[in-house]
Amino acid sequence: MRQIIAGNWKMFGRLAEIPAYAEAIRSAPAHVDLLICPPFTLLDRFATALKGSPIALGGQNCHAAAQGAHTGDIAAPMLAETGATYVILGHSERRENHGETNAEIYAKAETAMAAGLIPIICVGETEMQRDAGEAEHVVRSQLSHSLPPRFAGIVAYEPVWAIGTGRTPTESEVAAMHATIRAALVAQLGAGGSAINILYGGSVKPGNAAALLALPEVGGALVGGASLKAADLLAIAVAAPGG
Ligand code: PGA
Image (cartoon, rainbow, N blue to C red; front, top):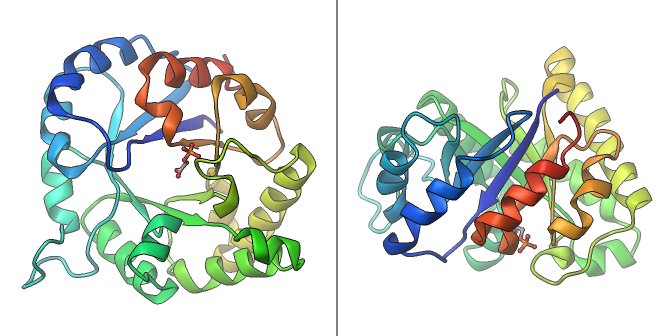
């Protein structure tokens, strides 16, 4: 399985940064699939800057409806029109800041797939849940309630307490959770569940990428802070196995 390295720019980045960034990431190694998820306003310009390269683009959210009176929201077909082929759904910052539920994420995933987008569904426990020994139960429940039965996409395991903190779970904790996710995907989706890339996210940096990406059932990374620097994202891509 080819690894996927996805950069999540969150609410960072300006138009003026795109040309140099796009030029730099064009030198990404060919053994990984690279994907950038910038704010909506940068997608179109990014698509132009990356024309002719294999680097893909994604949104960071979409609405559950394909269109409608939803001021301030973005529809999946609109993302697809910009050239995006992926969309991040259910990121913990959206679950927390916007109260997104598993049921909404399920509906968004269906709409995204109908628009031809590949959903990247995020799951992950809070620190309190991990300390209480509930991490695996929480993640299994997120998977069973937010993935539609015909799910064809990507899953990102992002422990909430590791996002933007510089802290990561131990290698054995990551491996154990990824094994749990794989088993849940196969139980839920049948054979299709074994073909899904399971990304790890949460403080992935050039310094820890090789160790994290080499773990069993880790199929790539969802990278926040470090993706804002082209050199760091490239270093993470280079560290992925298979090169
Ligand atoms: P981080 O963010 O790499 O800055 O921890 C990851 C994410 O939220 O996707």
